[in-house]
Length: 361
Image (cartoon, rainbow, N blue to C red; front, side):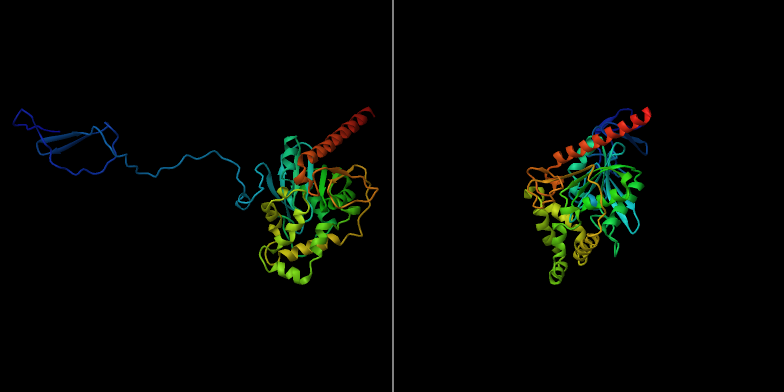
């Protein structure tokens, strides 16, 4: 309703306002008074209600979520990317080692993968050790997993032991309880022989006969003929057909080795040169088969699955876990973590006893 007031006539009468086109403005309900002056008439409109939402002149920004730890994109899209590990790259000479570090402080535990596997092998064991107060270091050996692959290596066992020693120095870790899987056992044995002050105790998971570098995984790769290797290299995912049967035969149940994990282990060897690099690794590791350094078995624990077809010599005592074949970190992570913690506690007790003896002396 429009009220018209004329100065010459004191009375005011109501009349229907003409149709006016007002500009679009954003006005909230019952909060504006617009006065239009035209000649001697004062026209007033009180906007009682506005049905449309207000026009916003600036873009609407969503609230910023709280800061959370993010994984690099290349890892966030991959399966088995742990959220509670720090990813580090450690320059060790010819290249850099990729490693996952769980926790800081506490007893240090070093977990080393074997041939055809990489750091995700320990994805079930490392969180258990972290929850029990340990700091856990899980590296990829040079040439394996996400570590660098320098042309020509070297990838021998002695070289891999030196790389681990340098990596521990960069992480400022002086002593570790070391746990290895097949090839990792051989590397740790060489590390303990060269730097005994680094290793408090060792656990060998599914070691090869005589603790030699050669094992069923390496034999499966080295047994490939030239035409077979060429055929594997001609397909982007040909190496999966090579490693898949080897990995699945190392577990008691196929559920422990799903296709996604097989692809994760085979990913570094895809492409035209991937299979050849895998063959170079197998050759480099086996070069020192006859040059293994002697080392006392004191402080060592050998453990494997009850169904492991590899049998060690009679003078090598072995603890066998039921319901497992060779890849204990995937098949029996809880019992394996308990064995590791026993070694950690024993190492700590012995250190305390030595300190008390020094105090008495």
